[in-house]
Image 1 (cartoon, rainbow, N blue to C red):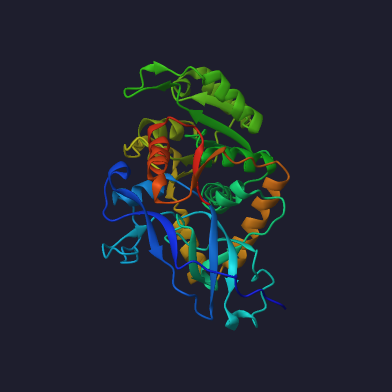
Image 2 (spheres, rainbow, N blue to C red):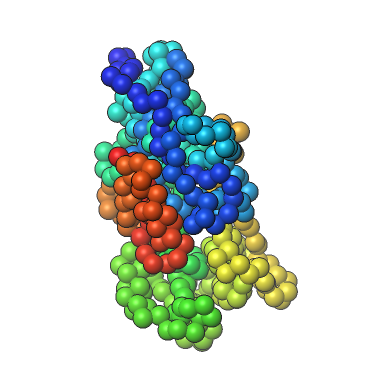
Length: 383
C-alpha cells in the first residue's frame, strides 16, 4: 500500500475555539492559536473540516458535564492553560506517520475522512495530531460533509435506544417526548425504516412560563409526519381521552412497549401513563430540569422499567469490551440511511473561521445555539 505521508508544509500552530476557565460561553469562549507539534512516526495529522456545537459542549464550557476537557498550556505566546472544546466533527487525514505504512488499514491514507472514536478529543480546532486508535473512518460516498460532522452523537443515540432496550418487530409502537429534537427526528426516521410506529410528543406552548401558543404548531406536526411519524401530539393533548384512544388504536389495543424521555417532569409522567405493562422508559436527557416523577401505582400495577442511556458510556464500553464491530455496523447502517435519503439530519449553519479576528461571529454562534434564535445546528469550519 502506498501512502502520501507529508504535506509540502505543515503549520506550526492551529486555530482553536476553547476556554481558559469554566463559565458562560459568552464570557469565557475564546479563539486562540495553539501549538502544533510535528507528528511522531506513529501518528496522523488531521484537519477538521466541520465541527458542530452541541448542548453537551456548552455544558462542558459551563463545567457541569461529567466529562470535561483538559486545560493545557498550548496557546502560542501565552502560558495560561486552555481547553479546546468540541466532541463531534469530521476531519481529513493530511499526513500519515512512517511507522503506520505496514498497518493493514485501507482507510489510513491522506484524504481519508475520519470521526472521533470517543468524546473529549477537542474538535473545535483546525489541525491536530492523533493516534490511529482515536479515529474511525467515515468515507461513505453518499454522506455529505455536514452529515458526517453530525452523525456520531444524535443519530447514534437514536439508533442505540431503538436497538438495545427492547426487541422491536415491524408494527410495534414506541413513544417519545422532545420529538422535534435532533435525536427525536432521528428516532422517527430510523423507526420508519424498520416499520416501527412512533408516538411523538412536542410542546404546544412556548415562552418562559409556557403560556404562549406555538405559532408554528401545525407546520411542526406536518414536518414530523413527513419524516415518518405515526402520531404527533402536544404535551397538553396527552391529557385528553381522544389522544389515549388514538394511542390504543395505533397499538391494536395496547400501549407502547418502549419510550424515550429527554424532558423529565410531567412530560415523563404523562408518557408513563399510556405505556403498556412491563414497558421500558429510557431517559437520555432532562430539558425541563425536573426529575422523573412516576406515581407508585404505575410501578406496582404496570411493573414499568426505567433505564438511562448516555452515548459516551456506550462508546467507552465498545473500547473496553472490544465491540468495535457493533459500532462499525451501526455507522454503516446509518450511512446507508443517510445516503438513501431515509435519514435526513437537521439543517446546519456554517460558521467560517479565518483567524482570531472572527471571535465575534464564533460567540454569536454560541448565542444562537443557546438562545433559540436559530433552529439549525451551528457548524464551526476553519478556513
